[in-house]
Length: 111
Image (cartoon, rainbow, N blue to C red; front, side, top):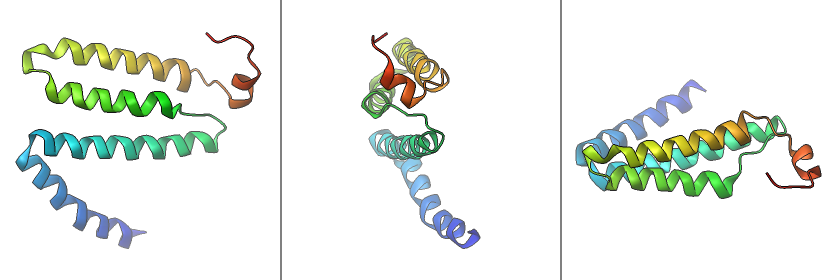
């Protein structure tokens, strides 16, 4: 386990440092990749506990947040803040609301 972590660090520390150095779209692409991979792993952990991350919402919202953060000027942070509030609402309703997969399938109406 430690060997895997050391190898990962030897590979990814230079990648992160280079992306930070170049900044801009290179850094945003790295952050997008990390967020999507992290979301996938988080979804797998939720499924192990009979919960489900809705990938058709999570992945587009993640891409939207990264693109908006990249394209929004520094003084236009309101747009990014609104996007984060929307994402927080998604987490609250579908993740922390603990909607069980079986219960969600049995519901007759969509909220």
